Length: 263
Image (cartoon, rainbow, N blue to C red; front, side, top):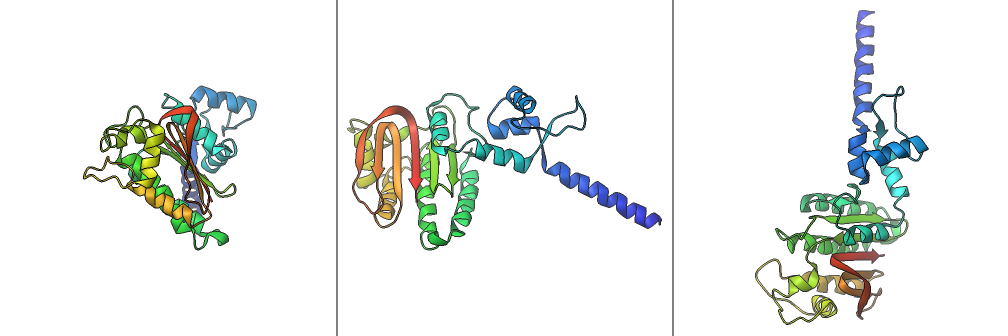
């Protein structure tokens, strides 16, 4: 009888610890969602995102999967969310669910993307290429801004398999400023985009951006993938199975880059 009671106690204790590990504090949720604690309290009161409390006055806790689902459901347009962050000067407007503060975090989430894409039947032959071009663009952000981030380091990286899109953004130096280290006579962002996607930019230093974007273009030319690429006041579009670059002046200005991949 004693052994039964002891085992029951240990089971209950372990179960509680397991449940605890799945719960998040209000401070952790604020970081994940990219909002203030005061906002979470308002959401709790209004029923928008309800916390777990045994009684009034207790600390607020949240189930991790509920928080992640809430963020995804309320960030249905990932591109708009990335764009808002890319043009902003605030460090607190990006959900940590989409924020890769360094290249190791990005590589881990890129592996998850590849795994998720591989489960989609129609992408069985194409998913490594989609992952490769997302990886090329994301790695560029880290490689070419290393030690030179103008304000906030890291990138926005998110994807939606239902809408078939991947979004990346950074608040780095942008293509024109980076390419000018190798091509100082470049006049504007439109010209810099064209060079980045069509010409081999030689140089020993990693900041000489551009060589990998020819690979991105090559993949799109042969696959059902399209690309929209913003930098500075320029926008580039490449349609699926096309080598044509549609480069124009954009109605928004980004000091870094903003990219939408559709597949």
